[in-house]
Length: 143
Image (cartoon, rainbow, N blue to C red; front, side, top):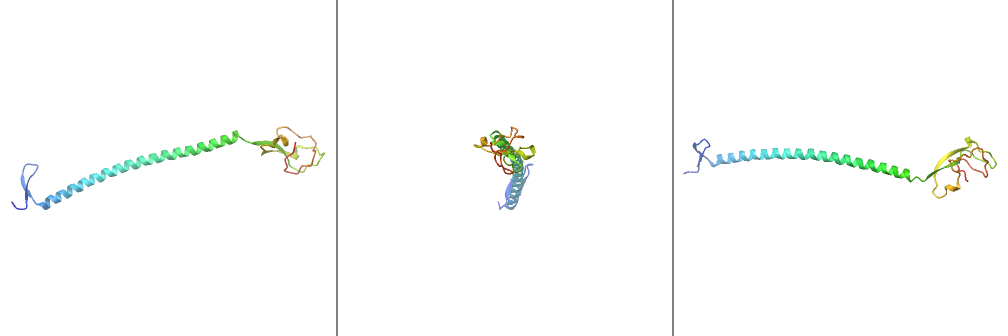
């Protein structure tokens, strides 16, 4: 026999094919196989990307919730441990012996950790009382 090989077709016929024809068939089969593999890869990649988007969205949502929760907890903690006290403040200069009127004073919220007892409590009215020592405008009224 020469360089051609004998082959049997699927319908039972005998035939001859050249090595070049066999190579073309192999290349075509490889191309079909690689196309199928590429399509499968693309489908897997699309599924992975859609799953990745969902996981990123969930992570973003959880991250946002954690940030909001931290702000809320910081606010609650700061309100519960507030060291602010209300005291009286002079709106105008007050001279010794002067009677305090409502327009002369206002309530101020200040942070006086250890010194709050040295100033008049903003919860008690001091209208109608007399000034003992000079108090400048914007100064806290001492006890």
